[in-house]
Length: 401
Image (cartoon, rainbow, N blue to C red):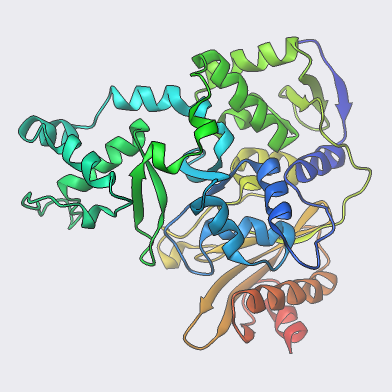
């Protein structure tokens, strides 16, 4: 790769943040147009079952737009014509529905590689696929609602997927079934793909696998602004070799520009339409499943922040807390806070708060307090309660008083 122009570390941070939709003025009233603008920027919202503060897929819009009606996101994903669909992106995610054609190669691969459980089930009940598809022809159903008389197996620590659930997940992975939404228990409601996805999307001819990788890498580059090959691959959880090949093709087409970043020895690529702000004003709580922090190495390289999810770490070994948000101010991360919504008491709990190296705690605490009050109000909570734990905890307690 021919060496390209050189970016300062601060320029690279601002490019990355602007590409992800940070730094824009928060609207007084959030509309579907604002939600669509974020979809256009990030392409996906990761889904997770943990609901300590708010479901993971709702948090990125709050980080970028401030308080908004969560029904806007629900309608974008669950109501025709859908602008989002659930599938595997970086992980289980709500993805821009326009990406569906470029994930069909993955669907075909998964269709050809059913797991051992699915092979066992279909060997004994080959009619089960047709039965399930016939059931779904009447409308979306959860796995528990599918009529199946199989005897449940009780193995593997109580994990007890029914035969219908195994086959439904296989059909979902294969693209024959899609998710029409989720119920109050956060269970998937499955429907036939042709009933869930927009006809215009289904009518797109199948792209080649190389063309699909070009489209996905193009979208990752647009979402990241500036990134190395590893980060471009991580964004949609693609293998590095085909991503590197796609990068080469996009570079030849002039869509990616090679750049050097101050302090980093790996080559990076700049999206040809990326904004390069001279300054950036942002104040946000960034959750652990936000697309800004998908690639932890990139986060460390560009922002100097070492960030790990400690949810599954034993409590005694956690450094910062169970479910920790990063605190963005301007173009740097200045703090991190462990958060939990106590819905019974109507309180947003802050078990600990920590300043990042180089931040000014006395300046950070009042701005963080304001952001936490906004988050609490958006969640329908009436108070914020912090304890003097962590390097910022005592100052935050005073700022909230």
